[in-house]
Image (cartoon, rainbow, N blue to C red; front, side):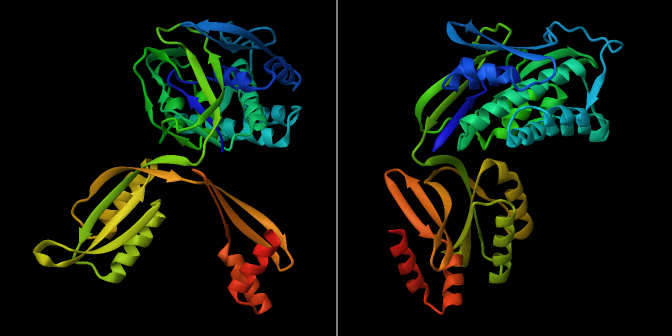
Length: 392
């Protein structure tokens, strides 16, 4: 499996992500040339090497009509504001694949939704300053185009360092992380122990959109590394590091929640298990045990990830009679799985292919086997053997 691991230990911004992804390209200079050919009005991309704390990386500068966002001084009399409809009109006319256009608008909608909740207005009433908008469109488009070309099968992002302190903006002095950044990263592990805004709303939205999960780097074989350098100096190297590599199978951090009940009926336990799965449990199983006072009891064990854990705990207390539960940290090892559809004389059949850790397994979708067996008055075993012969 092809994996991108994004190290956001110094936060993330659109230009830093663009620069890091550019370094992963087979020909970085050619990619920057392509960025300048996608026809974002008034936008140009410039790439240059930059050193931070002894590390060499790439710095991307986006200019709008010859000026950067940092050069720009807010003056509403000279610059108008744009809404989502204006942005969509710009993106529609860009020379990029349709999938990338959809990705760009999906990311921008994440930002607009966050701003809408913060300001208490409808998304259609959210307006962005012209220069800041074009800078964000440029960053988002570049990252979406790069992700489309690199086509990773999985993206994992580290916990995001958002920084601390305060920042001055058009609305006044705001706390760091900015309200929009916090809103976008709801449910994502974040922290802040360096003074300054390390993660911008644009960077946060890009991470949120492309990340399949947030956590530690998995066991993987490293192929290439990209360093996207930020504009400011810190005691630590101010960069986003993206590692591209492959892995055989995956590992996930999981939690096991367990408790015993001795006063619930089988029907009530069955309903509780159904509700726990609906709440996001990866697995739920029961074991008959001998409990207090030698009473026959049922051990209920739930396997879940951190994102679903809070909801599952509430669900367990709501639908079982337990007064407490235990948590054990666990690690889950997974084979890489994909589903393919194959054509056979009997019809279309899906098959699940699982690989990793030196193992390859193929299993035909049982629902498809049942359907074909019923249609052809055959046993499932006969169907399976005929398909295996076709597949050999």
